[in-house]
Amino acid sequence: MIEAVLSIGGIGLTAAVALGLAAKKFAVEVDPRELAVLEALPGANCGACGFPGCGGFAKALVEGKANPNACTPGGQGTVEKIAHILGIAAVAADPRVAVVLCQGDNRQAALKYRYVGMGDCNAAQRLAEGPKQCPGGCLGLGSCARICPFGAIEITDEGLAVISRELCTGCTKCVAACPRNVIRMTPLSASVHVLCNSHDKGAQVRKYCAVGCIACHICAKTVPGAYVIEEFLARVIYEHHQEAGAAVEKCPTHCIRDFARGYPPGSRFAAPTVPVGGKSAA
Image (tube, rainbow, N blue to C red; front, side):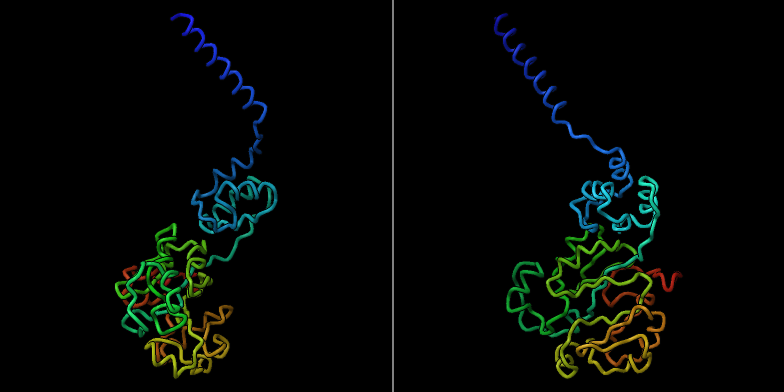
């Protein structure tokens, strides 16, 4: 009995010594700045920086392979902390938010067929290019909302994705998840957007959506420097977004929305305190 106990104890002691030596031999030295940067990051692991998690981003920063302002969830505060740790200048990035360029929910947009499959936009898109007649409209099945790490996206009761301007960190994960490219990154300071993603001609748009852009050019005629019409679709020229609000009431289909005045119908997000030109709208 005693011999067995001593034998097992000897094996355990030998294994412990071997593991200790192996750990010492194969240990990877970590730059202390990398650990400090990792602690300064928000820990969202969202991948918005383009690296696999906060750890990968911290390593790339120390190696000079990443820009400190690539961490959009961290904001300017994180940029300054990183710059202090690395001894470099803190360069602020223009804050951006994601916007769903569509208001065509189930009340406003016509369907090609009734979809009863998996509740996933990518799955629905693969079935005859989606159930909506509009080729670019939001499918409203929530693929973007499920992937958002910050709870910034809601799906309204009528099947439209809406993104909170206050909760969105600009990580871009929703942009990649949308099979119809209906979500775009836009300057946070710009509150006016053309919420349409169809490049069909106006007569065709009228047949399937009550709130789609019909390329009537009224917005561009009202504020020539703030809008441009490309392939039958108006868009705001964000360099001149401060003037874009003048065309909101002129739009005959009401596809231009000023988020400073509220979210699309059906949204449960509270009236936003949207920064407009660097000032709060509330």
